[in-house]
Length: 202
Image (cartoon, rainbow, N blue to C red; front, side, top):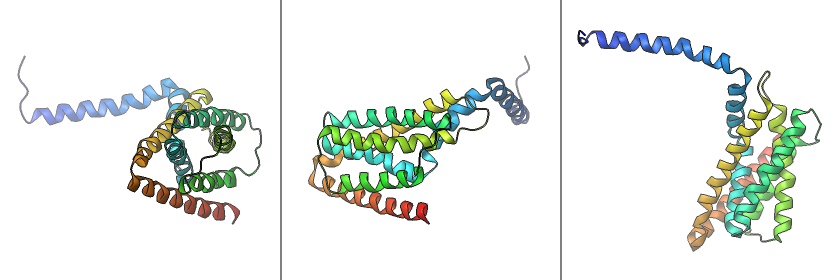
């Protein structure tokens, strides 16, 4: 076989790239709403800062509380959120979704800022209550033609990753300066939540 000349290599690479660009939409079309639903679900939780802050705050608070809350809170939130997402997918109305999401940032931020240590059941109930609002917001924004199941799987996975991020950051709670930093982070989440609540009511 004749070896490629230096001038031919870029042409071959450009041709391969063009073929790939043509093939990718065809593959995506073949996958139908499944691929679109999964990717949309993964992107939705990070599309709004209010969602991101509240979900990270769950991880921060769990890290402050320690075992077993450090893993129970990040498990409870996605489970209840999936239920809220189901309600949204089915078109079941939940009043005050946007204000509920904003208040979740406010209260979870307060929990972190004050290093609050309520009974475990109360902490789980608080996290679960707000998870319904977050899930419903995700569920009602399912793209047309997308797979509802894979969309839900996508936003639950990313939510878990956001919780894990909060836990990882929250491990600085072991040190005095880390505890101060976490309390400052909680105050910042609360301030952002107040802004989101004001915007939701405006």
